Image (cartoon, rainbow, N blue to C red; front, side):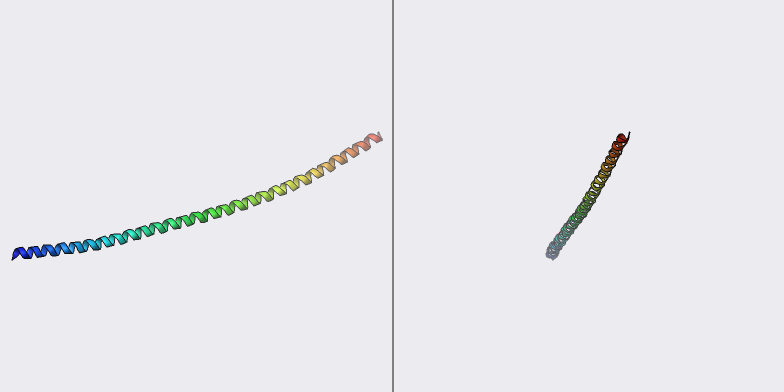
Length: 104
């Protein structure tokens, strides 16, 4: 009687272990899927943040270029105005010199 009882208990233990093993495998699969999803979401989020950061940097560069262009335009206008004034000053000085030469 002992041998069949021990054999029955061994069979029951083996069936229990295989059922536990299936549950453990299912839990492990679920955990692996959850980890994979978390990693995928984190990578997607990081990619989106990098894209946004690059967009902001691009806009900042565009604004900087616009400011440089405006400053260059202003400097060119100032230089043109100064050159015109210098030309008038030279012309006036030459006229005065011509008058001085005639009067002498």
